[in-house]
Image (cartoon, rainbow, N blue to C red):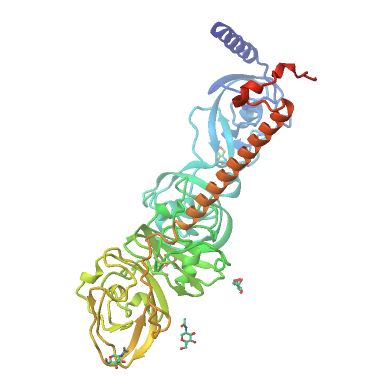
Length: 506
Ligand SMILES: *[C@@H]1O[C@H](CO)[C@@H](O)[C@H](O)[C@H]1NC(C)=O
Ligand SMILES: *[C@@H]1O[C@H](CO)[C@@H](O)[C@H](O)[C@H]1NC(C)=O
Ligand SMILES: *[C@@H]1O[C@H](CO)[C@@H](O)[C@H](O)[C@H]1NC(C)=O
Ligand SMILES: *[C@@H]1O[C@H](CO)[C@@H](O)[C@H](O)[C@H]1NC(C)=O
Ligand SMILES: *[C@@H]1O[C@H](CO)[C@@H](O)[C@H](O)[C@H]1NC(C)=O
Ligand SMILES: *[C@@H]1O[C@H](CO)[C@@H](O)[C@H](O)[C@H]1NC(C)=O
């Protein structure tokens, strides 16, 4: 088998060589089909008067007529002769000019070229050179060498990290920190058009902002958050675009308020919360959408659940990663948190997770059933029999009007103090007069586990259904067999009718 393969490989190589060597050159021959990096070409006479295209000056697109380009470049006369052709990389542009009675054409980017000298001059890039449409259309990346002194050039750039295609390449490279004012070589990566480009001052260069532009470029192949599809209402803080940078701007679409994605927290949200709904909850955008700044945050020991801007968030216990829309976030609730905590400012009710052992906290509580707003919520919740001291758990707090007196009592091994009039109170039931306590203890994962448990139940049901179908099928099979073979069954061997006696029909 191996020998056979080798034989065919050799045959193929031989064929290639045989086809390549006795090549006949005409005025139409170009460098496209050549596999060698340089090769001699024997040009016939009379190519000057032919019409085969030539693009470039000194360096020609690889689909240009070699023999006519050789005359253009002054290597041959119309008498023909031999020239050496050197294949060259694609150029960002080709200049058209008339030389030696041959007119060459201009062109933008073209992926392959050739010249008649091994070393070609690189297309000079000035401080003003933008990524032009044509150069831009084909390659996904290309290198340019920037001249020094572009910092002071008046060339404009639009965007930051990702720039519009008509921005100055070299100035953008300084803005992005890829080059200094001394210039040098940079690699440019083409990017799809962006809905908007951000103005920013970086490295002493001011960029301008711009709304949609259909093409763009950057100095890294993957711009975090930029190559991603647009943000949808479904996106949670788990999305990979949020894991790269500590903060960045994102634009939320409209209509996320009625989307069903859950959110946990207030001000700071668990990272599996729906980002755009959280932004509405936090009052950063309305349901019409808009731009918000996303900040990745550390995990919090407790997340608040409350209704804000028509969106209800869920409470939760510790969750390892979170996000917010401001760099600074309020402290999470703990054993000392009172109803006057800024987290709950002017909220009629809220929920949060109380850590265990709050009864041991030094914080005071005043009242029974209704507690002064200065009381420690978690301790009051133990006093009121809502959670067990050993477990902690989620409590629901209702803000109540001020009471004339707050009576101190001892309940569930927690002592409360008495107080006179205090302007705001809270309780763990909607009506402060309702004393119908039910000592419930909320388990730790009321919401996160919900979807999974539903799926589990469904799976069990499907398995059960499958078993029932199997049993019915087995029963039917048994019944059918009994009918065909009389009352034969394996445990009734004595009354067996021999199955072979039944004629088999085909
Ligand atoms: C074309 O190339 C020649 C030789 O290198 C040069 O002198 C001339 O300036 C070039 N023309 C253009 C338009 O670049
Ligand atoms: C950039 O623009 C800001 C505001 O217009 C200006 O204060 C700052 O000096 C500018 N920076 C440069 C480097 O031009
Ligand atoms: C995000 O947008 C704010 C203004 O809304 C702007 O001040 C900030 O620089 C932007 N940040 C980034 C990383 O673009
Ligand atoms: C959200 O849904 C509710 C009830 O279905 C509806 O009354 C409300 O107008 C909707 N809001 C938006 C912004 O679509
Ligand atoms: C507090 O105690 C006093 C006297 O025992 C009683 O009259 C009053 O109704 C109590 N107030 C509340 C709010 O329970
Ligand atoms: C709370 O009190 C109001 C009036 O004080 C009453 O209308 C309402 O039904 C009460 N709610 C509950 C849950 O007891």
